[in-house]
Amino acid sequence: MHTFNIQFDSKSYFYQKALANQVTTQGTLAVAQNFDLQELNRQFYWNAKGSPIFFADRLAQARYKLFQTLVKKGQNILSLNADSEKWTEFSRYTKRGFEIRQFKPGYATSYTELVDEQTSLIYLATIGDDLSVPDFQKVIRFAHDRGIVVVVDNTAGAEGILFDPITWGADFVLSNLLHWHPDIKLQGHVVVRSSSLVVGQPWAKRSPYSAENKEEGKIIPLPTSSFWRENPNEVDRIKGKLSATLQLAKWLVASPHTAAVVYPGLAAHPDHFNALKFFRNGYGNQLFWEVKGDKPAFSLLQKQFLGEPVPGVKITPVSGKTVFKIEVRESNLKTITDALQRAFTNLDSISAQQRQPEDGQQATDVQLHSPESQEAMASVEAPGI
Image 1: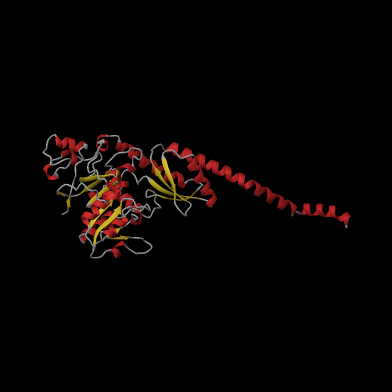
Image 2: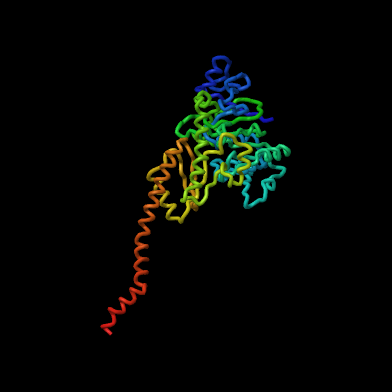
């Protein structure tokens, strides 16, 4: 059983509600076990299970706070399908004496090979950076049989609309709610939930990060807005995005400009069975799209997307490949596909213009080497012999 410390923000909706009914300690701090906050335990509209422990402004903050509580010096953490080398707080774990092990299919046959007696935590994402979908049931059973804690980054799971890891036995779940609403700026948008909890003394006022990063490390344990709990339209909005992503993936598969599409909702995806088993309402809102043709065609599309962004999606080129990562942010599929089709039409037009001089030169060469051309040249040259 682990002890977590909760600090209540005096500007928080929940804190103000508690303040009216409970006795608080000094300043904006309150001893968490003195509070009986029904609001804190009230489920989201989409019924994500588990109790919220704290809220943070960034996923890195929430992850750091969890890890420093759950992992001791000398122990190691195994990251299955989340690229730990991209974590902004990665260096801090080394300073604390933690080892982060990254499972890479090309370097190890199975993640179980990287687990030893000092492995205290397995970290995985609902949908990995490579769009892989783990067998959560198998991983969680393996971990719990060895007393290993399982933490899941369920950002892609939309707080239970797509997937809720706690129903499959995960110990802790992190979710970045702004993934589904990138244009809404809220404090405390990363929620951390637990399947079980013992609450201890309040948090210290100091940031969990170093002093020079106070702003970056500021923790806001309770949300300053009740938007996420009080907007009943969120479920339909997110379901719409999930549906649009699947339809977009199928549309791209049928396009002559496509070499390949990687998306868990497609039968060709290696983890499609896992997606069918664990997900509901969709398969995530991100996909990889490999462009058919050479590098110049990819570069032309990239310039078009920069000059005239496709509405409703975020398109990011994957370094070193003719691949785009597409994140669907709106559910209007027709608007998205119409914009992509215009980009394809422009690409075809530019490619045709570039081919015209080459085609003209080829036609001239063929004409010069034809029998008729050779005879004509001979008749012109004959008088001069």
